[in-house]
Length: 274
Image (tube, rainbow, N blue to C red; front, top):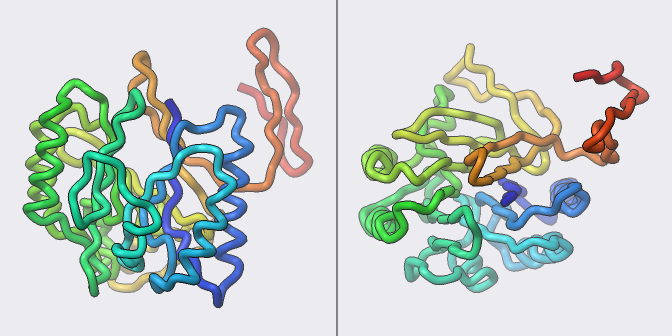
């Protein structure tokens, strides 16, 4: 099973390059040699939560050939997303929080939206719902997806918009080893960290990846880098592996066809040999 994760498109009609970036990301997914079984979008779908932004967001996603599962970010309007993307059952009423049981890898989306705040929250009701879902399927490999990562970055600005309830989430997950990965967005950069018994990964944005400057943690200094997505691949033999992919308009080349190696000599790079 393969799952592609996008995050933080921040669609805004004032900035058409963001829509163009999401369109490139959709094309990237549709041209993968093996199409994914599902696409996750971990929040901040649009910039202001306006209806015209969501209309464009929906139009941009329409070409995707895989089902899309969304959780809200701090820039989103939860009520609007609930109308546009009604969650499957089982779900937590009033939240975009739900389990997807259609695949070998169970997907559970957590709604960390905290209205009026840049930071997120997992309160008692949301955590109790999650615990009930995990207890009902303790043997099923599970991936949790959410907007706010439950770890600190060392960047003061980002840590000021962190997740309330992360300690309680950590305690909960210690009792549920079937959770193989926790994936999030929000940071616009790639981060991998240990959490409980598992691993947290954050997905960069579809428009750009930001490079942190940890030598100046009180400032938010960034370097604009190419956009990326995550590809999560699960098999019974390998478990869950997660790959970071640059979203780029480049063709796929056969390097090994199962029987023999093929030369790959890109016009602006060295010969590749493994």
